[in-house]
Amino acid sequence: MKIPIWYANQDIELGLPDSCRVDVYDLPQKRLTQLPEDHWLHSGVVPAEVTEFLGSAQHLLVVVNDHYRPTPTASVLNAIGDASPLERTTFLVATGLHGAPSEMQLQQIFGKLYPQAKARLRIHNAYDDSKLVTFGSGANTVGLNQLFEQCDSVLIIGSVEPHYFAGFTGGRKIILPGCASFADVSRNHAHALCPRSQPLARHGNPVWEDISNRTSCLNYKRRYAIQVVCDHQGLIFHLSHGDWDRAYDSACDFVRIHYAHNVAVLYDVVISVVCPPLDGNLYQLQKSYENVAAAVKPGGTILLISGCIEGTGDGKFLKLAEKAASGELHVDGQSEWMLMGIHKVKRTERLTEKLKLMLVSTLPASDLEFLPIQPCSDIDTAVAELLRIYGMSCNIAVVLDSASQVLSCA
Image 1: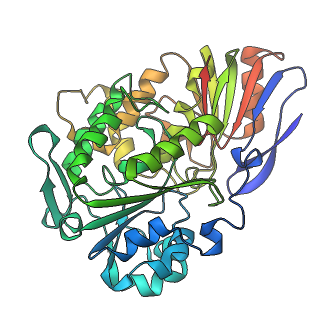
Image 2 (image 1 turned 180 degrees about the horizontal axis):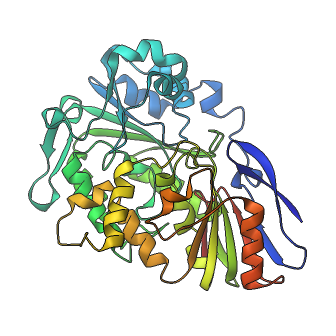
C-alpha cells in the first residue's frame, strides 16, 4: 500500500506491504470542519464582549506566540483590529527561551498589521533581567516581562495542541514559560521528568500546575483570551474566547476529543510523520515520539520521519547529550541544566529503555551520535529493516502530523 506523507518540504509516498496490519491516523484537518464564513473571525462582526474588553483598556498588552507555533495570529489581529485601540496597545512576542524572530518572521506573525504595530512591538528576552519584574509571593513568585506591570489589561492569543510534558500548549503557558525569566522557566521545566508530566494531562501534572499557580499573580489584571485549534498551515477548526481559563478549557476539550486516540492493540511499529513547523530541526522532534509512545509494544520501534532541514536546533542540546552519554552529567538538584535540553535527553533515555527510536532525516548520522536514536539514510531502508525485525505481518501505525495527535492504550 502507498500512503501520502510529508518529508523534507515535499509530498512523497510511504510504501508498506499489504501483508502488514496498518492503521493510518490521518491528518486531523481531514476530519474537521473549518470555522464557517459567517464566523466573526471572518465576517468582521466582533462580539460585543471582545469589543468591550478591548475598548475599555487603558493600557492593553497583547501577548502573541513566536514563529515556533502555527497560531494564525495575523488572522486574529486583523479581525479585532478596528476594536483595538492601537495607540493604547503594546504587543509582546512570547519567545520563552527561543531566539528572537527575524524581521520576516515578525511580518508573518503580524501580517498586514505589522507596519502599524512595529513601533509598539516588543520581543521577550528571558535573559535580560533589566526588563523583568518579580510578581507573586512566597513559593509562587515569578519573574515576568516588565510590560505586565505597566498594563491594566492583558489579551493572550494562542493555539492549543497536545504538549508532551505540559499537557497542552496555549493558555497560561504563553505567560510561563513564554514571558518569564530564564530562572523561572528552569524552575518550571525541572518538573518535566516527573512521570505525571504527560501529553493531555493537566490536573496532577506538576508542570501545568506550576504554570497555573504562578501565573495567578496576574489574576488582578483585566484578562481575556482568544484560543484557537488549527493545523500547521493556520486553518482554524475551533475558536474560544473569554476568561483565560474558560477559553482554554474549551479548546483543550476540543483537542482531547479530536486529536487523541485510544488504541485497542499495541503496535510493533509506529511511523511518526512530523509536519511543519516542528519538522525543521532535531530539537523540536520530541513531541512527535512522546505523543505516540504509549501505543508501542515493549521492544517495539517508533520510526520518525522528519526532514530537519534546518539542522539540530539548539546546539547546547547535543553538548549535554554528549555529557549525559559519558556519565559526566548528573541530576544534582540544580535546575539550570534543564533549560539547555537535558530534560529532553533524560526523557528520551527513559523512553528508550522500553522501545527503540529511529529517525529518517537529512541530518548527518554524527548529529545523533550521543542520542539513543538510530539514524536512517532513507525511508525504504528503514522500513525494510523494521520488516526484517518484526516480520511481514507486523502491526504498524502511521501517524500523520504526530506532533498534534496522541495515541494511548485503552
